[in-house]
Figure: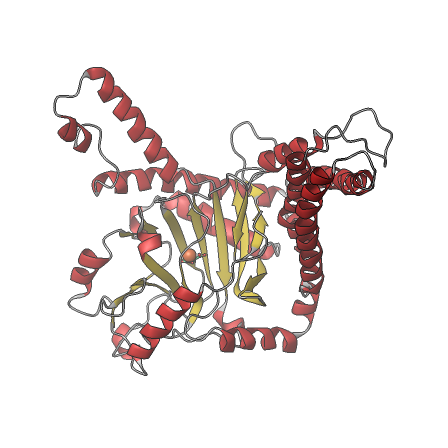
Length: 482
Ligand SMILES: O=C(O)CCC(=O)C(=O)O
Ligand SMILES: [Fe+2]
């Protein structure tokens, strides 16, 4: 487990400051569909961004998904997240909900979100309301639709080596058997990059936000989500977004409202190339039910932001989250590994250790930290938000808590044991050195978690809430917060 949240990388910061200096006070150029070179710029520099207009998506799917968003809003299932950026606690302007494979989690900005499970085949999930079940089912359907659509888009752009093309050309006449192996490899790669395992829903009503940050580089106007790369995704996997602005007349005369630049009444997705101040940015308007795909490595070579319009808007952002250390199965396995060092036959509260091997002790204490800070505290910090939709997490989380309690006893047992004469000095020193580092981390992280403001404080005290947003604004110069 990483000891601390990532702090600011000095090299990146220096690089950023250099670009900002070069930029001075001027705005960088960006294009919208009103500009004649818009499509050319898109083709040349943003070709891995694909827009699917609403009209190309089945009507029934639109209906179900849009209904689902409204149901989740009606039942108060979306929440602003308290995140940590560069050591500061901030409240995201957008409200969010994570839906996805049962037992999966997604970590962004040092905050772990737990999925409200969608009803996959073979899963038996209890939802708090039938309407919420229907909503989760709608996002599961949308997920499947977008997965298939993404495969088509990748194939069309030849972004995944097609079955007989590149590989065969390299190897010349490929024997049948090798060809099959190549095909299997191709299919696995395609699957890896397109099997969305969760979606992060976003919602914001701009009229309810007293303060929204201005886009800092291009002068694109108010942002709902600042420039960023999406984190913790499988390499080169696509992100697929469904966009729904829900009320009011959609079309406002573009040119009348803004003779130059993007129309501030309409929601847009903004794109720019990371670390590049030469290529103009792109602002793509999003109308009701439009989808966009960020294919292949677009998310790492480019950054995106969301530019607010006037109406409330939802989005569903489907991702292949990198979950090697992010599923319930994984953390249970880890806990069982740690507790293999405990003899089974003991009465509660006293544990007998099997081994005092320093590597075994170290591994146990590392897992102890992992389950406490990456799972239990993350889960309880969000209070009972998941209960609004389902009680799915309650049982496994209390099981994890039971395992953690046992690990607390293990730590005490190690400390008792190490005092005894029988252990050679060298072994004692090794254990104590490892233990000291891990227990120091534990203590520091406990303090840090205690200092995290609790969300009740945020929601009940508008002034404090505003103050935090302001701090975020001032502290983060032109990059902003999400
Ligand atoms: O709402 C959108 O269009 C995208 C939101 C986004 O970038 C995110 O949630 O990471
Ligand atoms: Fe994003």
